[in-house]
Image 1: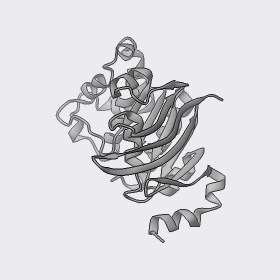
Image 2 (image 1 turned 45 degrees about the vertical axis):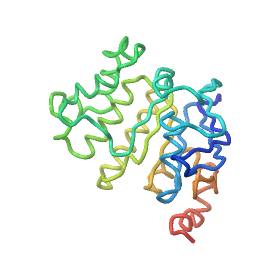
Image 3 (image 1 turned 135 degrees about the vertical axis):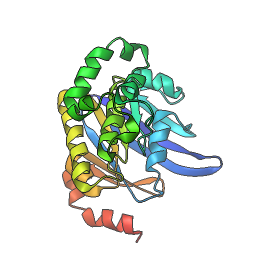
Image 4 (image 1 turned 30 degrees about the vertical axis):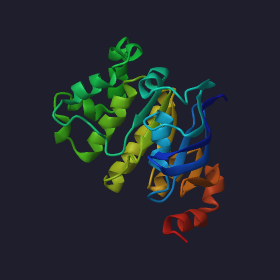
Length: 239
């Protein structure tokens, strides 16, 4: 199994404030990796660094063996890297269809927009029912589905999600998680999931990283991490 993404010794931050300290993360092709940790651990900063939204101070980011560390974000999207940000960031006054079409802005995605729309509607039939409805009028769960669907419109090889269950009722959060499972089964995509819902993440991920104060303090296959659940609880509670 080849590596979809390889992060090695990455350090980054904001201004003069360092957030990440020598972080290593590996994502195998076709797998789902969960990144857990308390607020302020550096989870979102890690995704933004991988995406190129903020610059890596040191270290490297490789995608399918290609060094993308210095590439701008739009080039990473063209290569197949896409991120669903925290808070969904939809265009509330545009319709579901318009939001989806905006996701297909790369040349490769535009050429297959009809095919991708069909795929998205198979994954999220509710969106097809609300095709002409404004995104801002959707329920929270529907908005999250739309945010994921819009990311899929770019035809990604690697999909990163930042807190997809945030603000959702438990039942809806699990519906979104089941949709991610379906994506992995039916579409050839590797996934990095940043999630505060530990139970959900441990249920769906193949491999888990625990971040604390910008460093990886625990990693392992899901079963290994489940056996050390106490360490995760301690990290979240800060003792």
